[in-house]
Amino acid sequence: GESVGLHLPTLSVQEGDNSIINCAYSNSASDYFIWYKQESGKGPQFIIDIRSNMDKRQGQRVTVLLNKTVKHLSLQIAATQPGDSAVYFCAENQAGTALIFGKGTTLSVSS
Amino acid sequence: ETGVTQSPTHLIKTRGQQVTLRCSSQSGHNTVSWYQQALGQGPQFIFQYYREEENGRGNFPPRFSGLQFPNYSSELNVNALELDDSALYLCASSLVGSGDEKLFFGSGTQLSVL
Figure (cartoon, one colour):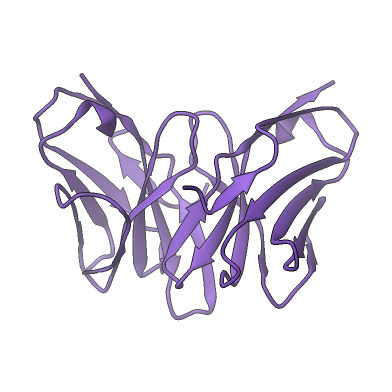
């Protein structure tokens, strides 16, 4: 089965709202996590990453939170814009070689 | 744009045929990974190449094989194509040994097997 998964397959928000996309992982030995954004017809695009020795990391309009106690990862997007509409994947790194991806959450932003 | 380029962008094959997909890594990267993405799913790891040798493999049969060349470009070969091989094939490059495991993906090759 999937070792990384997302709680919701779809998320709809209004432009300007904050978005929160959640992800649960199953391997407590994973030490590196990444969020990717994939637009239609394109490959996954790196958004932000976090290592297991951190709880929070911020980028431009995005924040990733890691809760190792419950094996939960979230991506927060501030002031969501129509250009943020895409499928978002979390991925975990095991053994330093393969990224294990979840199924993705489709974010729809309406103006 | 990531600097990872893949060709062709689209391909149609029939069951039983063989296919070769190509990838050029981002400049300065030494490692290439291949992923298969079925419709509506997340990418699944096929294998990774480092220094022209396979350096990790996912749950894919031996008819999926690859090559990495001295210039770090790569090929994915699939023999005896099956209908379920229809998917988006993604190539990603990274720089092993830099302490940064970020993968940078190309736009993929959409393979349809009829």
